[in-house]
Length: 319
Ligand code: ADP
Ligand code: MG
Image (cartoon, rainbow, N blue to C red; front, side, top):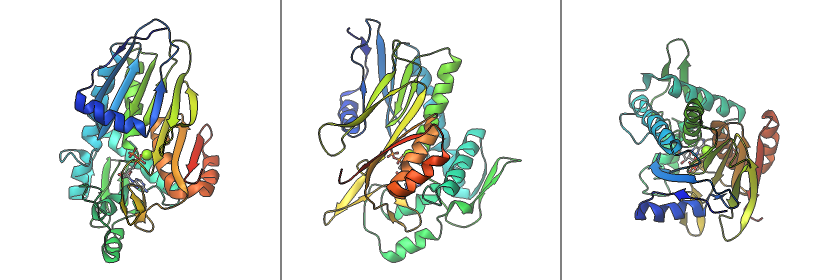
């Protein structure tokens, strides 16, 4: 009945970890066999990357791969391809970066602009980039909106050159990069012959195989209090949650969160508190969860029909 958990988290990281997990998922490890289950966590991509597996080697494989993807896609690393693209407005990129940008543009089309990785200038003017949160003037929002819109990204498949056709465009892959990194890590685990592992990058989770013959159980915690908002038993599936509690500030009792409606320039403001998406891959789960925070329940329900094999659970603020 007992599970051996090899856990290496520094005291500071542990405190942060508790803060993070308190508003995301709880991964139930009870009821497993007497075989050891190794758990390791590292801070990466601005969050905690957690690996749970009966295989001791799994964590190192995941961390190496997530680090590699972070080096390509992070807007906070001045050397990354995304930072260079944002700086110069044109860059020949790696297949990974090209793939994520292509997928991002596809989600932009499918969500009628609700999912838009060119939200960078909006995050800047609202102070989310440097955590110096503020309510900007309408004129500043209007100005930022001039550089927003994924139709400003030109993708050249022949030579993998990406170009912006308008000044001031800034790509921010915060809504999709972690899901993609999880997918890449899972590929590396498979190549290494690892058949059982859970990878959690700040709420973007992939459940590879089974946990001692049973599905992995992931519980959605109630973001506003005790109790849960449901649980899922998953095998070879991804699950992601986006919510209004991850990063926000309040002015006169009103909450302004980090997910923007790129058409208005304001943080998404509807009845939705959090969205959980189960999908065959992490990238899709991550992107759709963010998009649906913007779209609201009704439009999300109709979008989901385009994605066979995808399951969505939306928790509304008044639920
Ligand atoms: P988190 O990464 O906090 O778990 P999400 O996956 O929902 O949550 O991503 C939120 C991030 O996505 C924001 O911090 C910002 O970088 C970016 N973002 C905000 N609004 C949008 C949007 N409408 N479309 C695409 N990306 C967005
Ligand atoms: Mg997302």
